[in-house]
Image (cartoon, rainbow, N blue to C red):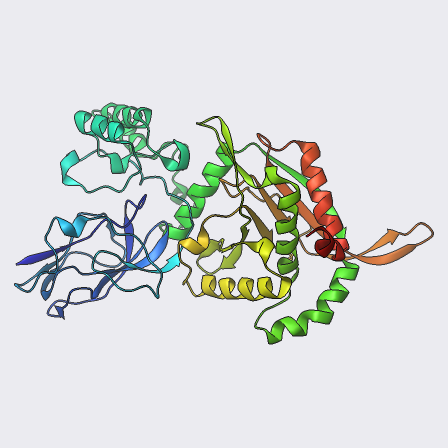
Length: 437
């Protein structure tokens, strides 16, 4: 007999939701054959087997939540590609076209490119019985073992969702308080910061309850962390893009022949990439724990993409080194990969600043949430013609609403409006992009 045990799914990934079991009882499987498709906080992955044999029993089904260390399949005697110990070794997500390996699942979609906090806390099982992927220092893990806490169940409040000693102590306190008080048990099992329990809505009528998908859960966690961590301020302005639209339509065909789409977003990426050179404090991150500011020498611009699976933010790397045709092609390719659930973790990571363009849907303005650990995000709403006074008369001009949200710990209001004015003027006079480099 041999078991297929779910391996470690990667740094910060504590569990996965089963989307599909790819084998059935009686199948003969080989090493490296995909066994189960999981949706995690970061990706949809196919997990390959590290053992071979005939499937005798399947201990998972669609909708189940699996953690590393759990038995997924029981096999009849067959060749084994790895020992039981090695099957629980860390598994790093890889791109769809990367070579297959027994110790790594294949990534087919990404939810976000940031470390995820650990799963919701529940009363701890014996610490030695669970393989964890929660980010914590050795001293924190040692404390958790000593007091009988499963560190993978603790929600981290440190930088990047890292678990601190105080997090472990607070978790243990909640669990201890839950014993002997049924009313407090549910509260103890809720994640820190989850807020009070919802009322029973069924008292007032019919309801339907659906579990969050991994992507939606990750989005909720990431945006909650960003909102709670960053003191947000939003500046608003408008850019006169009458001239820009004329030029964009003139050269749109050239971009299409090259495989791109010369959109306002593509132009905005070029503008932001150039602006980050002039305003380096916008290309930085705040290290609150280390009381320092990290200034980045590279310029990567994130693009928010609306998909059926949720909001994804692929990153255009070295955006300052690419022309508008190149940017339009790359944005088009990444957007298609996002919608097809084929983005890799690397394509979702390392942004300097992000852009969220809702103009294609509508709206006159909005307050985008900064994509932590970045310190600013540009929001673009739907443009339209407005009467603008030219000194002697009103004339119709195409105006584009802009919203700049920023981290007030690093960026002052005066610098923010200077940055936004710079962006607006660059959109109004595209020649300045070439002039300023």
